Image (cartoon, rainbow, N blue to C red; front, side, top):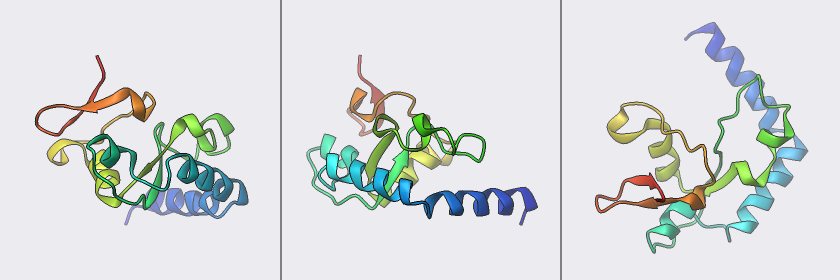
Length: 116
C-alpha cells in the first residue's frame, strides 16, 4: 500500500476520534432524523449509517471548522449512497456534491442531479 495513503488514513482516523466530530456527527444525524437524505428524496425510509462531508475532508482541511464540522457541509447517508457518491456513476470517478444535498434531485433513471 502507498505510504501517503497510509499516512492520510492515520491522520483522518485521528479526526474521526475527536469529540468535536462526534458532536457534529450526532447533530447532522439528528437534523436528518437519522435517515439517509438521498433515500428520503426517493420516498424511501432507510437509516443513515454515515455522515458524509460534501466538501471532502482531507488532512489539509480537517482543522477548518467550516468544512469539518459545519452542518451545511454534512449529510446523513446509508452505506449504499455513500459508496455511490464516492464511486460516481458506474465507478467512473467520485461524484462532487458541492452544493447542499437538498439542492439535488433524482432524474428518471434514479441518478442524482442538481435541481434546475
